[in-house]
Length: 278
Image (cartoon, rainbow, N blue to C red; front, side):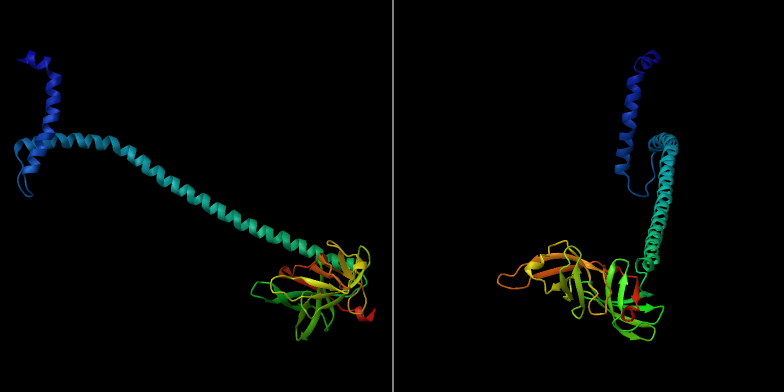
């Protein structure tokens, strides 16, 4: 008998492994909730419970390591995210400092560029804009006495002129304003014209009037103040000719000009106070 069991030990083991689960399923299927289990069920359940406990013990370190790795990864991601946000903030502050330094250097150089003028520094404190976010008027606070019609300039060129003066601040009419009139001359061929604002809501374009075909103005020509009229001094940069449209049968050309100053980015300006006294 023992010899028989030894010879068929593998088959018997396989049979037991298959039979016990089947027995449990059959017994469980026939039992309702609250019924007592039979002795074979208790034996089989105990054996399977031991096997399950062993497997759980083997797998627990692995699952714990996986979960710990995930938590560790999340903490690392949060740390890196915080560092990235900090670097972004520091970069934004650095860019702001560099831009301010550039503006200040340009402002400091303004008296050197215009040694014959009395320049009163002023800061833009307000803007009126169109629905298309185009600036139509700026308000400044000057560090000295200013009066209406005084020219206003920036490091980029001519901004416009003082319109109304109030206690502590003043309104400025920009080059693009339809009320603006500036006597201009072409740097390339000295052709004379009058720069008038068009008052568009979508751009800052102006028109150069009184230019004939013989003036031979072309796109890219730089226009500066001519000094005529006694309001604006000579050679202040106004802008660049953008388009020339000859009119068939007409004496004058239609010339469009792009101002040199970006009015939307104005922060600091100067008011020239001694033009009429020179």
